[in-house]
Amino acid sequence: MKFLETPLRDLLGIRYPIAQAPMAGVGTPELAAAVSEAGALGSVAGARLSPDELRAAIRRARELTDLPFAVNLFARPFSGDDVFAVVLEERPAALSFTFGPVDPAPFREAGIVVLGTATTAAEARALDVDVVVAQGAEAGGHRGTFLGPFEEGLVPLAELVPAVVRDAAAPVLAAGAIMDGADVVAALELGAQGAQLGTAFLFTRECAAPRAWLDALRTRDTVVTAAYTGRPARAARTPFLEELMAGPEPLPYPDQARLHAPLRGRDGYGFYLGGTGARRARELTAGELVRTLVAEAELSSSAQGALT
Image (cartoon, rainbow, N blue to C red; front, side):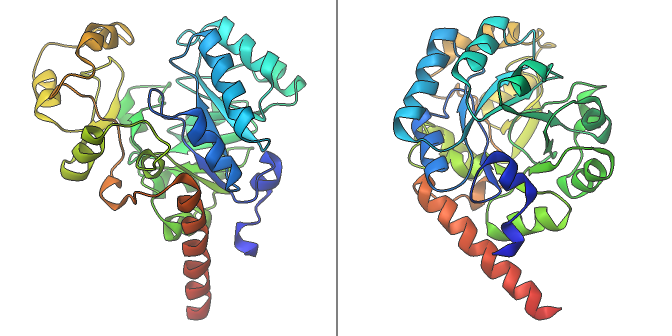
C-alpha cells in the first residue's frame, strides 16, 4: 500500500494517513482510542470541556491506547489558557485547533505536532502549523473560517485542497464528505497527504451521537447556518433549525449556543451537525471502519492503476 505511505503518516506516527475529526460533544475518548488502535489518528474532543474534564478525557484515552492521538481545542478566546495548559502538561502526540491561529511554539517545544484548520488558501498561509487541515465546504460541524465572511470559506474540497497544497508550506489533511476508501484516494490524488473524517466516524458505535442525530442526517439535507450557535456550522436541516433560520439575527458565538442550551436533549429541538456525505455512512465499530477504509482505498488505487 505504497500510496498510503505519505510523509504525514510518518510525522504523526500512525500506520495509515487517516484522522478522525474531534466532534465536540459526541466524540468520546473511547472513540479516539479505538481509531488510534486501528492505525489511524484518533482525536479527543476538548473544545467544550473544562480543564479537569479535558485531563480526564486524555487520561482515559491513554488507558485504552498507547498509540498517538490528537487533542482538539478552539483557538483563543473560544478556548482559555487553562485548557491549553492541560495539553502542554499531558503532552498528547498532536494538538489540532480551529477558529483561528494558535502560537505553535510552546507545543512544538513539548514535542507536540500542531494541526490548524483552514477553509481558504489565504487562511492556510496565515497559519504556522505542522499540518493544515483543509476543511472543504462539504464538511460537517462548525466552519473554521477566520479570515473574511464565512461564505468565502465555503470552497468545495476538490478546489480547496489543490489551492492549499500550492500555497501552504505544511502537509495537508483533507476534510469534507470523505466517507469511503475511494474518497481517501481521491483526496490523496488532489495533493493531500491524508484524509480527516468526521461524519463517517459519527455513525460508529464508540461515538456518543444519539439515534435521533443519525436519523436526521440520514433523512434530511444539510445547511450551513449560524442560527443555532452564532457561528456558521453545517447541520441537518430540521424543522427546528428552519424556524431558527427564519428568526432574528443570532447572537455572537457562544452566546447564541448558551441561549439554546436548555433545549438540548428535547425531542424535536436537536442541532445535528454533520456533512453532506452522511447518507453514505456505515454503522460499524471505529476499528472496522478504519480497516474498511484501508481495504477500499487499496482496491480503488489498484483499479485506477489498472486503467492507466
